[in-house]
Length: 401
Image (cartoon, rainbow, N blue to C red; front, top):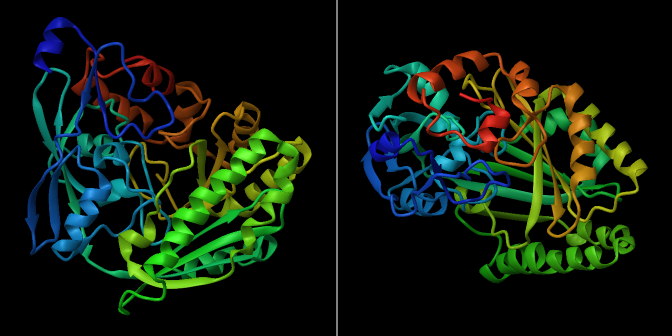
């Protein structure tokens, strides 16, 4: 870093490369943290765990389980590095829990001049508020200290429901379950629901063969075939979509991280927007009506999740409880009409785009969405006055340094 500063070269850290945007691209030096992936310290008394920033979530989950710990909430995949996941405001679902960045209680950051800074809620709290969701603009994350919990199992209930019934009882579903999400299947009246709740019951209810059939054969192989058929002949998609809700009810108990996350082998493009929780019904109705009018044929379900609010400056959940609506398009299928239409629908509902997923916003449109925008920019100028970590994406969404 000091050499890059002396040479005036831009530097960009990259996690697992999972983001759909060019957030980790650079015309300078790209710092890959794949081998910077060790667990450094486990404090059994506080359940705080310090890791190197390049560790992948899947590796971390396995390690934590072996020492009797777990992350309290996760998204639906575990391919990301911890640094990339928190830097882009990655989240799971559950009104009682925030995104992954809310589980961070300490950071070490390499600043633009090569100096190493430490921060927490008590030590340099402004850097802490900026660095937890920093988009790679604040510096290179070196180590991350996480607040974990005792390892736990989840009871999962997955079943199709009529989408109008889900929306009618949406508050009850979100409030009565530890983790609730659903997927509306376009061109149908159905939603695929998932309810995950903590339990002291042992793992069981689904054999390994049944799990492979559900998560690999059906969710990946068969679904991939449906997507390929739809790409070849879009007129088939409405009929193919009607097969998705036919899977029936599934109930099982598994380790928390194995319940939260699933393998994903079907490639796609994605956009996701967060908005205040109470906007979800109106936003979904507007989206469903627009899709019906648009003439688009969509093979991917629309995903809806919920989180607690937080006070992290550039978190997509800053300021209160949020719902998240994510849309996808199969690889090789033009997505701009769909994604621009979705973005226009989300705007009047106070929508904020996921930092690592596709969107068309700029610093001018994003700044009013974040009450602590100027505070973040002040920290950015303090730790990176020369714009060492800037790139085309950050110039667009944050503005030049």
